[in-house]
Each structure stands twice: as structure tokens, then as C-alpha cells.
Image (cartoon, rainbow, N blue to C red; front, top):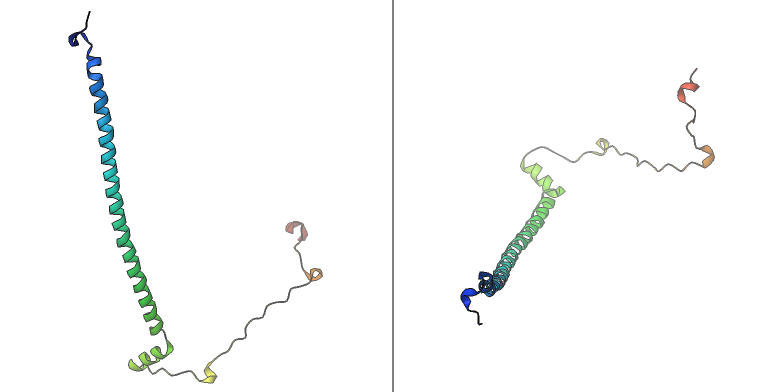
Length: 127
């Protein structure tokens, strides 16, 4: 006897529809994930470009400030500035300059002259 749809169970009727729904969700979810990932990559590349340009600008500023600092610390510029401020500074006379001798490197001592600490307890040596 032929079976009709009314006699089939509900699981058999909704099975293909459920499979199609799950397959559509997977394909749709993959598409949405792909678009979201591409959007994130675009945003990150823009942030990276902005930060690289900022880094380049900071390097230029750092070089400019380093050049300006070396100019301001130059002896000629300091002398000019002292004259502008009327500080009355003059170069020191030879009698005012104290020269210190460079300390020499001590010659290594031979093995026989080296001194060693005692291995005995310090309290036992004291009378």
C-alpha cells in the first residue's frame, strides 16, 4: 500500500529543510566572515599607514631638534650668548687652569707577590 505524506513522521518531512538551512547558514556565515575579515584588513592597513607617516614625521623632528641642540651647545654660540647677556665671562688664564695627570694602568703583579686572605677563622687569630 502506498504511503502518503500525512503518515510520514515530522522528522522525515523537516530533515531536508533543516539540512538546507544549515548549509545556507554555513555559506552565509562564511561570506559574512570573509567580508568582515577584509574590512578589518583594510582598517589595519590604514592605521599602519597613519602610524608610519607619524613615525617618519617624528624622526624628521628628532633630527631637526638634534641639529638645533648641537648648534646651541657649540662653543661659538655660547660665547655669543654670553656677550648678549653681558655676563662678563672671559677665557681662563693659564694660571687658572689645573691639569690633572691621567692615571696609569697598574702593572700586573707576579704570582709570587700576590697576597691571599687567611683560610682560618678571624676570631681564632685574634689574641
